[in-house]
Every structure is written in structure tokens, then in C-alpha cells.
Length: 274
Ligand SMILES: [Zn+2]
Image 1 (tube, rainbow, N blue to C red):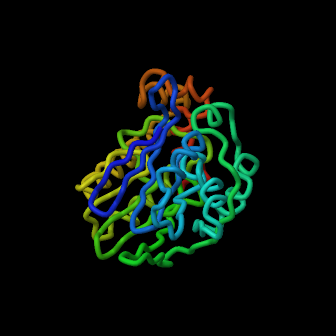
Image 2: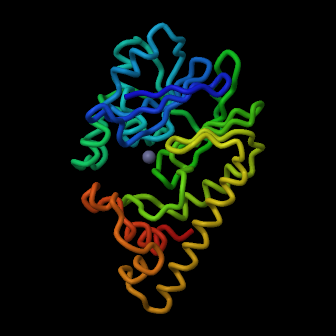
């Protein structure tokens, strides 16, 4: 299922798996002036190809390689010969082998589907992707994944955050995310002059500074609490209960891959402490 909405020259494309006529596990891509930022989930890949039929498509930029952001890469590259897919250098092996180069548990296949392989071209931090009307600066923002980038249109003050900024108060995390690195990356983008923030899985924000400040403050305060409790000798399990409360639906749905204890462990992991 696709849902399109327009913000001036930016088209927001929400994609989801359709079950009994309803959409589930939404993720967001954006089309602006021929640049497609992310491609949604594999379950809606064909719909996205059809929706873009006859529309200018100069290139794709992937913010990162999680399956809900690269789902239609393969189909689009098949349909439009020579279509360039731009991503961080660490993303390229994953694009070529999306379900082999990263753990691809059952819930990920069920929720978002298995993306087809695609061929990417690397872009570096600071590089600029130009369309006819706009220029998008690549900002390397690891933490949510090691290959994560944001795109920044300086003249307009637009920031396309991928999953660096996720709405709400995080209470669970997947293994492999680095929460301290996420905070550093959030601090990197909050220093930019911003007017609108276009996230990969949350509402478009016309108060980006405030939203980013609130997120950083929440994550830092939570991290400080977690570390304090650990210093007092509390177990991960006890910290989880104290800080994040009872069990979450997502923990069941992801068969224990997306959990409160992963978030606590990410705060406490010595290799994550910067
Ligand atoms: Zn992601």
C-alpha cells in the first residue's frame, strides 16, 4: 500500500505491507525534483514503480540499507536502465545482496519483505547530489546503522533524516544500533540551519530544532539514568523494568530482536561509549 502526500516540491511516499485492506509497518520515502530518497519496503515495490511511471527519476539516494528503505531499488533499476543509486560506501555490498549481507530474520521478511539486489554508487560525507533545482549535501550520520546518511538542502533548510530521527520516545532497539553514536549524529545535524525535517518514519516537522533538541535530551537523560543504575549494581533486567516499564508489543512481534534490553545494553556497551 502507498500513501502520497505533498509538501511544496517534496512528495512524501509512505509505503506499507497490505493485509486485509489495511497498511502495516509503514516507512517513508521522498521524491523531490527527480531524486528519490529511499524506496520503501519490498511488499510495495511494484506499486512504487507504477506510481513513478512517467515521472522524472534522475537517481535514488538510500539513507541506509534497512529493508524498509531499499525495498524497490531492484525493481526501479530493472525498469529504468542505468538508474543511479547513491549510498554510503558501506551500503554497497548490502545493496548487492540485501538478505545475505545482513541478518534477515523472519519478522523482517514478514513485515517488509525481501528486497531485490541493486547496484549502488558510493557518496561521501560532504558530497553534493545536484538535481535541476536543488542541491543535497550528504551528511554521514552513523549509529542507527553504520552506513547511515542524511541529505541536507542548504538553500531550503530541508533535512531528510532517514531513520536517524525516529518519532516518539525510544524504548527499544535492534541489536547492532549504537545509541551513543546516534546522539553524536543528532548533534551533528542540529547545528545546521533547518526549516523542515523529513524523517524516514515519523511526521514531517516544521520545528526541526525543537524536535531534535527534545530527542537528544531524552536520549542523553535516559543514558545517564541507565549508567547511574548500573554503577549502583543493578542488573540489565532491573534497569529495563525501572527505566522502560513493562513488555512491549514490538518485542513479541520481532521475536526478541527489537527490545528494551538491547537499548540498555547499547547504552552500557564499552565499545559504544565514545
Ligand atoms: Zn532503519
